[in-house]
Amino acid sequence: MSRPIEGAERDRLSWVDAGRGVSMLLVTVFHVTFVMDGAFGPRVGIWPAIDDALVPLRMPLFFFISGLLAAQAVRKPLDRTRRRTSGLVYLYLLWSAIQVVHLFYSLPGRGASAPDIYDVVASFLFPTGLWYFWALVVFFLVSRLLVVVLRDRSIWALPAIAALAVVSPLVDQATDGIINSEFGAVFFGAACANFVWFYLGLHVRHGALDFVAHATWRKALAASVGYVVLYLVVAALGLATELRWLLSAVVLYAALQLLGLPSYRGRIGRSLAAVGRRTLPVYASQWIALHLLAKLIVEYPSLAPLGPHAVVASIATPVFALAIVALTWWIGGLVLRSPLSWLFDPPQWLVRPRGARSRRDDVSRHTEEGAPKGRS
Image 1 (cartoon, rainbow, N blue to C red):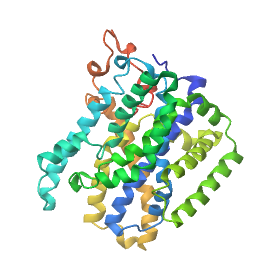
Image 2: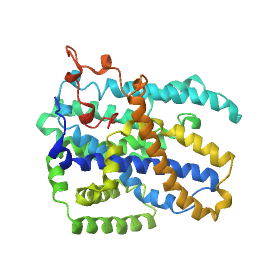
Image 3: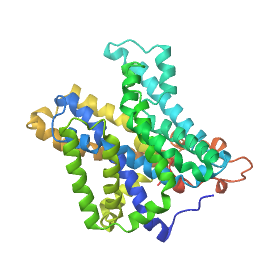
Image 4: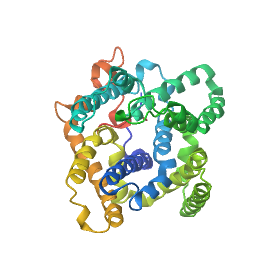
């Protein structure tokens, strides 16, 4: 079983939590840009352009860290890793059901018809809005199968998985429109694009830890500048989607260098690490905060008179994103300490290994490697 990460070990690996916190903040900024689109028009302000440049980092960083931390668990019997499988399936189904109920309530109010049975069933089976839960389960199970079958040669599967990332734009095109747009996109393409980073993390754990431990400002700066130049060239050529796998490789290198620097251990770094230790409530419930925010500023356009739209959107986007992360993180902590903890914490009967006599036999919530963290 995993042992608690405490003391010097926690300090040494705090970049892992900080990296997850960075990913969650970038996801929230991405979602807030949609709200700004509704308030001011599409792509107003600087954040849509910044978000475009950070797309190759946002989820690859998260899944790489998840794979890195799952390197030991993927070799254990499935009965000992239920929090990663049945626990995540439980959370995926629970929060998908909450979103479907919300749709049935909100669609008639917007003059739209209720979704049909196909869309409802497909929203549970396919990677839709909560695709991150869905992907973690699938990535873990497929990786475990490959590790069990190929054993010491499991790294040989990496080129085929990388090829899947290369063709992920075609997967997006092939699966576009297979579900009602009210449920959002189906993220089969995103799952194909990100599996390679999870699988890579599984196989380079020790090398990655050593790489981050030896990070320097010089390497971090050179990698960051190199990524900016590469992105500008690729974007100018109109190939940002087709070459996203290459952009992700370069920006992931730069991000790991930056996370290895001691500067993130200040107040900002500790805040990011705290978010990284409680990603589940932030991810699962932020759509509620986003919905309320959209109603507030779209139906009651109180931001419009504050100044030029580009300036207001540029300032409001990070402010709202930080507020949503802080609010959902805080409320998530309260919920986890209440009788409603089952909203973010799978029931023990579902995730406890067979024969376990107490909670000490479960994988610690603080060290559940790669699964969304419930408690800080």
